[in-house]
Length: 110
Length: 121
Image (cartoon, rainbow over all chains, first blue to last red):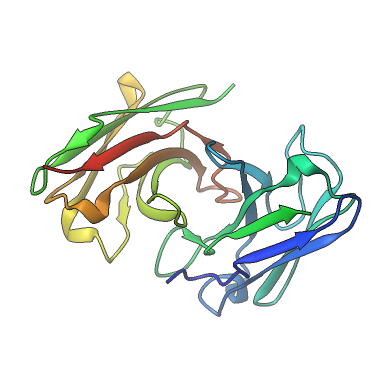
């Protein structure tokens, strides 16, 4: 069981907006630690998508955005595209475990 | 440009010790604040953090696997080695290493391609 909680799956039609939630506790997100998001395309290694709650690494489209409030965080994808179909993981620091992940959310583009 | 690559055996027998090497470039583990993390992913399952070693040789482990894991670094060779003892079929997974900037965001910002390890007799 993962320390951070994510919905197992979300879906949306091309062009729509979807959000993926990530819920932690007072040992991680609630303690003020940043949340990061990783995208894992089928058959590939994860890649950093959002870091420090809201920042996008170079090359990540502006369609991807992040937010954080207290013990929760969200990843939003606007203008959904077929190529966005992937697994998405949130990641943070925890006072008991240096690195913690969510259980992953499978995004299906209908 | 930061790159990492995992290497090691593709097949391990039950009870054996797995040894994986992460070879990296674009940064140095002599640099204050930097580290390398190990993560695994069983087929069809979520990512699981295993271990982390920092520039000052501080090593941290997932408590659920602590007794089986050892992580070391050779900064001069740009390598980090993970050993996992007493392997079992449930340890079959893709194993990744990642760059970890402990001084700032603590985001796993660069990942290796992963290496697939199967545990079977």
